[in-house]
Image 1 (tube, one colour):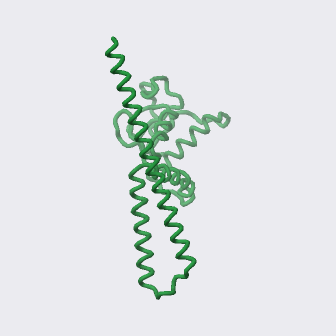
Image 2 (cartoon, rainbow, N blue to C red):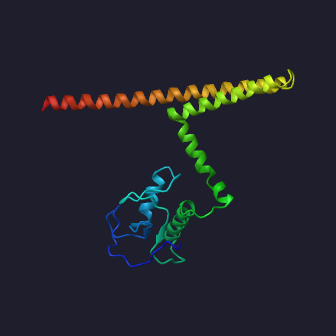
Image 3 (tube, helix red, strand yellow):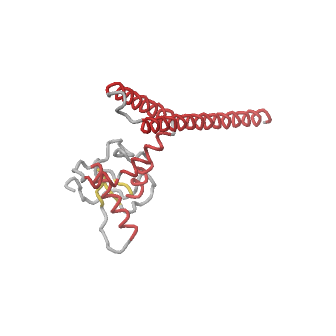
Length: 198
């Protein structure tokens, strides 16, 4: 970490939790925070990009720990592991293929979570259309019997399952939106009744 400046700090308070910094870290923009506060802030977002400094909004690419490491404290080891993980991802240093494979479950989780909203459904629909166009082009370009009948039946079943998934997800989104609107209307009516009674 050549970017780390281990100068003694003028103020040891974390501006996020407003307490004395526990496991203090300094960002590349020079601000001091508790490491658990910044890690929680990072994990609260998408995890796909570096966080912005809560004070100056500059991208935080490096977290420099300003506490001494001990070999016995488990919480400290966890915090140091989180700091190393953050720095590995966003410091600009080259990453190994194993690091990307380690991130695969996170990307799959974000992908599945993103499919639950309307924009995810649109992308899934476009993917379905692209696969259907590719299948149509392949069947036109190949001789008539090049694609065996059982595989086309499986493709049809797979397409039907994707359509059912799209339909169910749309219905669930509509139900969630209607529930949120009902709650908002009920709260507005309750406020109106309370205001009228006063």
